[in-house]
Amino acid sequence: MSVPMLKIGAVLSTMAMVTNWMSQTLPSLVGLNGTATAPDGTHQRIVSALYPGTDEGWHVYSSTCSLSLLPLPHPPPQALYPGTDEGWQVYSSASDPDGKCVCTVVAPARNLCKRDPRSRQLRLLTEQVQNVSQSVEVLDLRTSRDLQYVRDTEPLLKGVEGRLNIYTANPHSLTSKGLQELKGQMSQLRPLSSVVEQYRSDLLTLALLRGEVLNLSVTLTTIQEEVGAYDYEELQQRVLLLETRLHSCMNKLGCGRLTGVSIPITVRASGSRFGSWMTDAMIPSSDSRVWSMDGYYKGRRVLEFRTMGDFTRGQNFVQHLLPHPWAGTGHVVYNGSLYYNKHQSNILVQYHFRSRSVLLQRSLSGAGYNNTFPYSWGGSSDIDLMADETGLWAIYTSIPNAGNIQVSRLDPRTLDVLQSWNTGFPKRSAGEAFMICGTLYVTNSHLAGAKVHFAYHTNSSTYEYTDIPFHNLYSHISMMDYNPRERALYTWNNGHQVIYNVTLFHVIRSDG
Image (cartoon, rainbow, N blue to C red; front, side, top):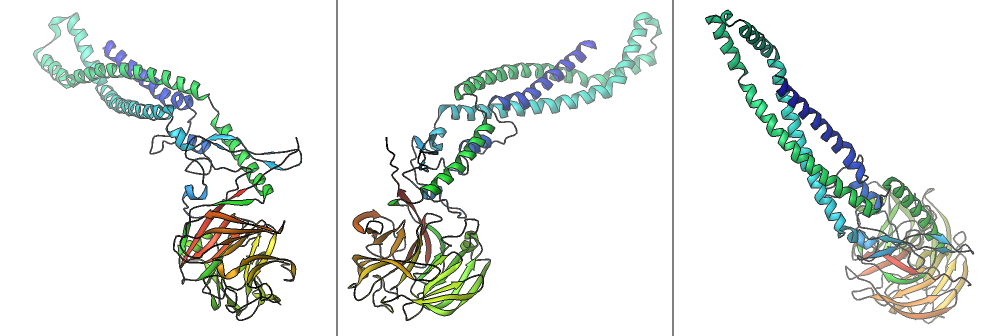
């Protein structure tokens, strides 16, 4: 009886060793302690450490590229963060001696890492580890069950052993009745032989598992050495710190020249063919309210949504009823107030949302109104108010300007005109216009095939013709405004609320 019991002990000891190794040693080899396995076989902690805040790879923030981080519910990552799908991308932050930002570093794109042979090998090894774990669990359950059977039959074993000792010492002591009882007890112990055979089979299985686990250990150790034995917790903290520095760097960079417009992102389909929607161009990003104004003629109802997600779902909003109706779609929310053109006049109105009152009204001297000088689509779009990194602007024209676009920078507290520029571009030939970093950008049409065709730089009083295409998804844009806080173009496109992200080129010059 001592030999089978020794085998049982050997099985249990070996299984405990294997189970302990599987639960502790394997995860620590690749830095996956306490992680779950993702559906594609990768590990979630590795993914979150290497690719923070996104499901599609690294974002690019550099001195030549400023990309927006817009809090949409489920935006397409490739639209929000345009970048390459191949190779390595720039990702870091620094400052030159003059305090100007220089943002550069190299980091892998996720798709590249997914093609890494080591990544595929890790997935295969993970599957093997799961198979080994399942085999160990089966052995553990079976051993626990059989061990309980052995414990239950132990008193019977001791009784049979005692009777056999007596019979060996005195063969004549076994009576006919005693012999029958001994045979009955032996028949009860007969199933124990199959348990012992199962243990023998399990010992062979454990021997195979030992070999497989040894191979896994060697392979994983090799991969660990190739990867470089990263401390993923430390790496994640360093990446989070880097992200913070990059955001700070991007904010310091501030302005740049428009070089590209992303593919359109449809946020919602609501309202009529014409309208406007916006977020505040000045307040902190923690305030994520969205405002919507449907229509271009004599409207008075402004809907205020708590977040972009609420706007997308059409819920959690309050209504503001303006005391004066609006004209056109060229409205802007700036520092908690709505600035708009009063219907059938060239009067500008400042409506304060918190107090629900008009703080200011002032005439924009000489500005045409009531479809005298609108954009090509009409809609009483004579006066277009907008904001950028440098302040509040009015885009309009007048008879002395011969219908050419005039750009005026406004004082948001008084609505006084601080400075004006005559661009020489006919307003009726423009589809829409927007300001970025003190430069007016004009599209050549409001219909399909439109592109950013003209740029006027107020800092140098110069202009240039451009050729920056963008996709007019729904073929009729009646509002296009830039939001400097989010580095994005908001558009109202044939009853659809659409966003475009922009790429701004910024050159940093340093002596020496």
